[in-house]
Length: 353
Image (cartoon, rainbow, N blue to C red; front, side):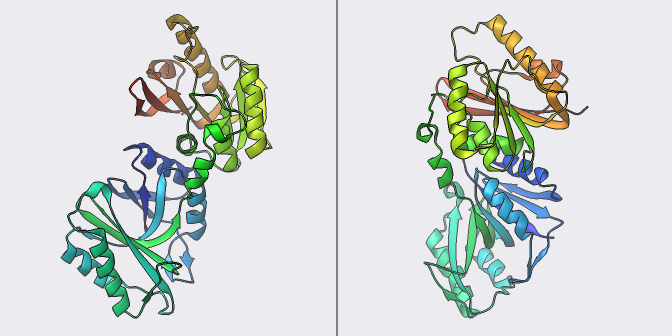
């Protein structure tokens, strides 16, 4: 059994978990969920390989791919032990760990308490685990260590392991909407857009469609992962802005000026769809026209999506009735409160036939 822990951001209770699962599924990785704690997901990677440098069993290529595509994860960790969160239990668990790195390698230990769920100080845990490593012949290096260890305290448990990779969340900050060549208010932030692309099981080579592409933020995140990007919109000014943004980040893209309810695309030609329709954001859209807009576009999305494909739709009101009418299977609905006057619904839909 090879246990891999994903230390998740606390931005939403469920979306970071769904993102990891979608990314693993898109990479065709055999896995099973072993534990789910607050901000920690632990999976068993069944088809891992062996890294000869550390003699630890895990899939190096997989970890590298995941660290480059995930947005709502902090660290990916090779789990060495799990214990109750009392200090004696933690120390007994660490003492039993078979540290097989060469003695010449240096280490650094960091501890994280999720939502301050433990009375033990992080500094005490770091110092005592460091003492175990020191007694085993290893030497600390707090600046540039060869190996990083991490202890996470959550839900009465301590998860201890070796950090395999960390997610560069700063790159998403660099791509904030206001930092792009063309800016329009009310669009998704890059981390959320990337997470939705992962939930849609989009990967390198996948053909992804955003039929309401707006300024292209979703397509930018998909394109940076190696997907084939296709966007549509009926506002020429916005579509030109999307081109400016995509030209900067994903030069190889396709944009079409067309109605999402009547797309010039063949049946079953798209692998996945991620979109944030503009309903509720314009006084021009009345209740009746909103019904027509969503009914037409979901039927078209179903038509162009391949069997087994997935669509992720962001909305401000329920779309499940329209989705079921279009023959979609509703997988999940995530509620995200943005601010007092905006609550998003993220609906995950599968085309089973």
